[in-house]
Image (cartoon, rainbow, N blue to C red; front, top):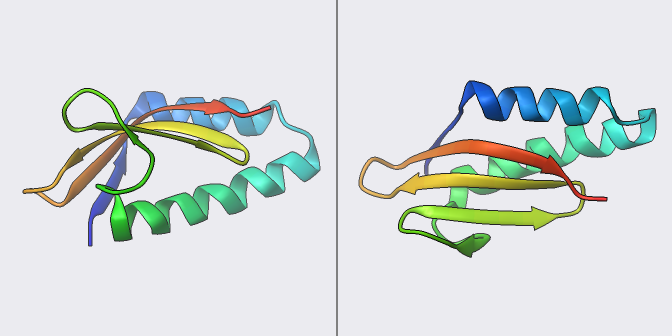
Length: 85
């Protein structure tokens, strides 16, 4: 199990995406963010695509995210979020 943290920039990105979405998109964003967190907690080192060492990218459904995984620390840090349109 991983601990998932978000940088302030990633939190701002997510808030910006949510604020600029319509009501049905907001529901999708909220639901997907919750699913994303569960998936990152369970399997962060195996989801998405590997980039530079320790960095992964996942883009599906409503959001794209970039996150850093530290397997020895069992820590995930989400550092960028963007909308998928």
